[in-house]
Image 1 (cartoon, rainbow, N blue to C red):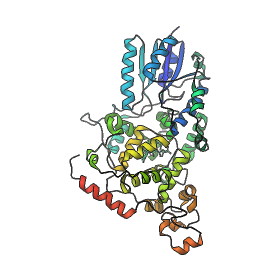
Image 2 (image 1 turned 45 degrees about the horizontal axis):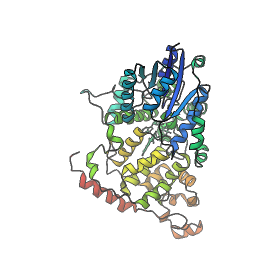
Image 3 (image 1 turned 60 degrees about the vertical axis):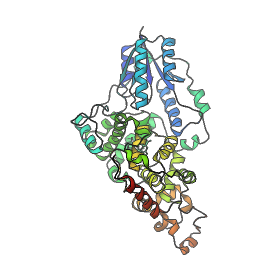
Length: 464
Ligand code: FAD
C-alpha cells in the first residue's frame, strides 16, 4: 500500500489542483494536511476567512482534512512518520520567504528518504517563465502583460473527482477547536458581508461572467455599484485558481479589461519573486531618505475613518466593517496617507494586512509602493490624488459616501465630498454641524499636497 501526503496551503480546492490530483492518481492512501503557522493570539480578518475556507474545504473532503498547528519544519516530518507516508506533494507558493523555506524543507525530506514534488500554484504564468530578451525581469506592467499573453496562460490542471476521495485517510483534526479559540466578536460583522463556500463563490463567478464582465471596464471604478468581481479573497486562498477563471471567461475576454486586472495580480507575484525585498523595502531607494512624519493621532484617525475627508473615511469604514475596500478607494486612501499625511507606506500596508480579508503580501506591497511612488511602474510621485475630485468623479451622487458615512447622508450632492465647505444655510437646513457631527479634515489638502511635492523635489535628483 503506498501512502502519500498532500500538503495544502493557499489551494483550498478540488478543481485544478495538480498536486492533489497527482497524489490521488499515484497512491493508494492520501492524507490531506494543513499546517497552521499563523500566530493566532491576535487573528486578522484574513485568518477569519482562512478558517471559514478551511471548514468548507474539509467538508468537500468528507471531513478528511488533517489540521495541525506549528512550524511546518517540525510538523511535516512528524506527520510523515506518524502516517508512514513515502511521498509528499504540494503546490507552489511564490512568496520569497515561503519559497526559501519550502526548498530547504524539500531537501531535508529528500535527505531523509521521502519522495517530494511540487506543482504549479495559483498563477497563470510561473514567474521565471516571462523575461525580457536579455533574460532580466520586466519592471513595467504593460510589456510584462504583453509578454505573458504571448507566452500563453497555463490551462487548468486536472480536477479531483469525488470517486477518488475514498482514498483519503482520516485522522484527528484540531481545526474546530482552534477555530473556536480564535473566534472574536468582530468576525460576525464580517460574516454579514460574505458567503465563503465554494458553492457561493461559483454563483458569484457565474453571475459576474454573465452580467458584469461586459461593463467591467467602465464600472470597475465606481465604488457604489457591484461592478467588480469581489473574487480577491477566494483567489488568495486558492478556492478558485486564476487558470479556471480565465477558462470560464472564455477566449472572448482574454485580452479584455477584467483579465488585464488579473494580470496585475500576476505582476505583483512576479515582482515580489524577482525583487524579494519589496515587501519591506522601497524598490526605488531614493525613497529611503523621505522624512516620513508618521503622526500617531493622524494614523489612528485614518484607520478609524475619521479623517474628515468623506471618500477616505467611507473606504476605511468599508474596510473595517467588511474586510474589503473597492480598488479605486484603496488608491485614494493610500494616496492620502502616503502623500498628504506623509506616513510611511509600510504603516498603511500593515493595517491593510491586518484588516483585509484578501490580504496578500505580493499584491499589497506592490500596490502600496505603486501608490507611494516608490515601486515598479509606480504612479509618478507628483500624481497626488485629490480625494474631493476623485469623489466627484467616481461617486458623483455620493451614494458610496452616504452608505459608509451616514452622518453626511442629508448633505446635498454638491457638498457631500467637501462638507467643511458647505455654506452655513445649507448646514442649518440639514441640521449638520461641521466639526461636531463629522470631523474637520485632519490635513489641509492644498498645503498637504504642496508639502509632499516639496519633499519629492528634494529627492528626485538623487540616483535611484
Ligand atoms: P476585480 O476588479 O474584480 O479584479 C479581479 C482580480 O484581479 C482581483 O480579485 C485581484 O486578484 C486582481 N486585481 C485587480 N486589481 C488589482 C491590482 N491593482 N493589483 C493586483 N491585483 C489586482 N489585492 C489583493 O488581492 N490583496 C491585497 O492585499 C491588496 N492590497 C491592495 C492595497 C492597495 C493600496 C491597493 C491600491 C490595491 C490593493 N489590492 C490588493 C489590489 C485590488 O485593490 C484588489 O485586488 C481588488 O480591489 C479586489 O477586488 P475584486 O476582486 O473585486 O477585483
